[in-house]
Amino acid sequence: DTGVSQDPRHKITKRGQNVTFRCDPISEHNRLYWYRQTLGQGPEFLTYFQNEAQLEKSRLLSDRFSAERPKGSFSTLEIQRTEQGDSAMYLCASSFTVAGTDTQYFGPGTRLTVL
Amino acid sequence: AQSVTQLGSHVSVSEGALVLLRCNYSSSVPPYLFWYVQYPNQGLQLLLKYTSAATLVKGINGFEAEFKKSETSFHLTKPSAHMSDAAEYFCAVTTYIIQGAQKLVFGQGTRLTINP
Image 1 (cartoon, chains in turn red, orange):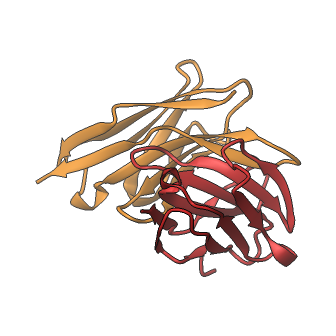
Image 2 (image 1 turned 30 degrees about the vertical axis):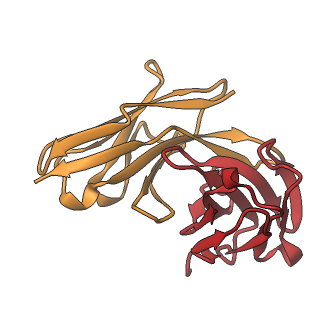
């Protein structure tokens, strides 16, 4: 069990550019979540995958955001035409439900700065 | 809708003193509750979780939390603070989304400072 990994750890981009983040979940976990955390706040839910299917999206996820999880393994989160308001920490978590409890394990996050 | 309120955005204690971080929840169903810790520029690490098996939950690094239904609280405590406990702490409650999946709804966080 190597834990959840995310790449890159930091990304600096100019407004209007596209960026893509990657998340590798714990291998036996079938559930994968993306959260966004702005400075001084708790994380907020963005989207959820069960295996390869994206089953839930938050209203926070505008049309500029797209997420995929091909083959139910790693996931990518793409932001098109970035805006300064997109600057945040993007966190990925994975889980496997046991006895009704969905315990989520988080990766180290990708910190995005949009100039 | 489920929600969490963390009382006190900043808590400062002396090394060796009791740590008490407060969390109150609102939930229309029996909740699952979590405490996570976040060190600077890192992700969230699970400290402990309440899943209705026992009201007093022990976690890692000497932390524990007590679920009190009558007070809708899930406060985090540690008898003796250590310098390495300095971090941001988040309380979270789960809310069902689809097909058994549960998203986490987090509080605003409490920054814990330890004074030597």
